Image (tube, rainbow, N blue to C red; front, side):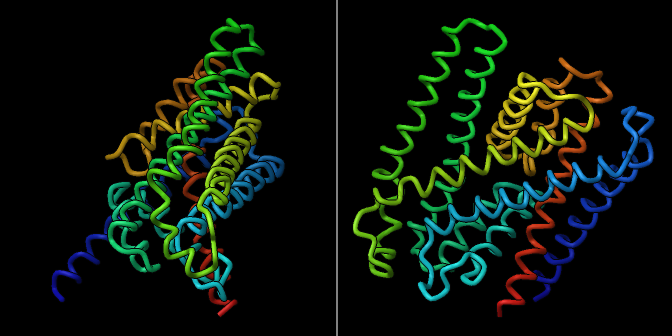
Length: 309
């Protein structure tokens, strides 16, 4: 009992320190916004940030459907809100920050067991849900880089190589991941609602992930549009940069939610088209946006769950 209380106190302190830190960053940016960026904080800026946040929340809703594909659930509660998947997914998103991604993987295993998987399948679920987004984000980054290289006049040979590698990654994910890794998870699902072949569900794993990363890339483009006029090259570069920064953040196992790695990548890329102080503000704004989106999604899930129950 005493150990559980101590652990709760430590977690509460950690969450409190994190919230205070990000609140301080937010209010500093708010106070110095027009001084640092030269952008007046108008109603249009608020609308753009709200639009980006709305798209971000919708992206998380789409992302949660990967869990719906992998986890067994009650057929009578066939929405991610009623069966508890959305709430579990939102909690794992928040745990990325404290104590970190490693704890998030452990929590995925725990939820896998809670939703009816044995320990082997639950571990497999956690591994797939962690590794599959890394592969998909890398493949999307390569495709975006290929398109960008064609537009800006980089050697078309490089662009073709990027496209080929991306196609191989997508094809390998479709062919190898289902047959070698995820198939055992569906033994219970076959009993519950009659899936005859796992191959029928291949696309159900990749499409939500692709939509998730593209939607988040669009949200980042909207944030960038606050600071500059957009052209096709800037749009593609911003999406490529954000998805690539997220990829690097995901493969850094000991950084909470990729904190630091993602921002350094963003600043390094944005510095090529913005002054350093603007690049820093955009990177910080994108992190604040990410936290706000996670918090909004969690509150939306809790509210819908209470209303529906």
